Length: 70
Image 1 (cartoon, helix red, strand yellow):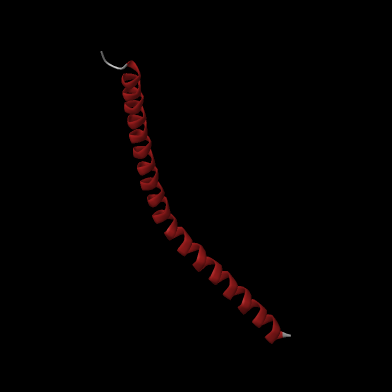
Image 2: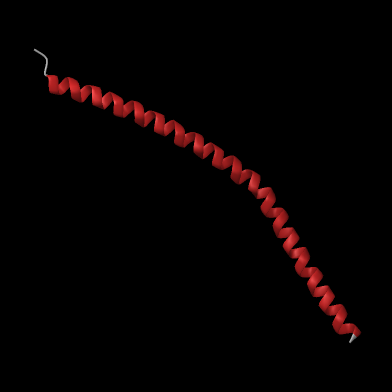
């Protein structure tokens, strides 16, 4: 006669493995999406850095022009 406890444990283990597999797939998809977002944001970061440096240079040149005219 089969052990009903062992059968129940086997069914529960199978469910756990199936859910773990689904969770792993979801996490891998999430990681893939995050990598795409990071790659896309790198271009935005470069543009923001360039814009910030340009603004600082403009402010410096305006201040230098005001000082020269004073």
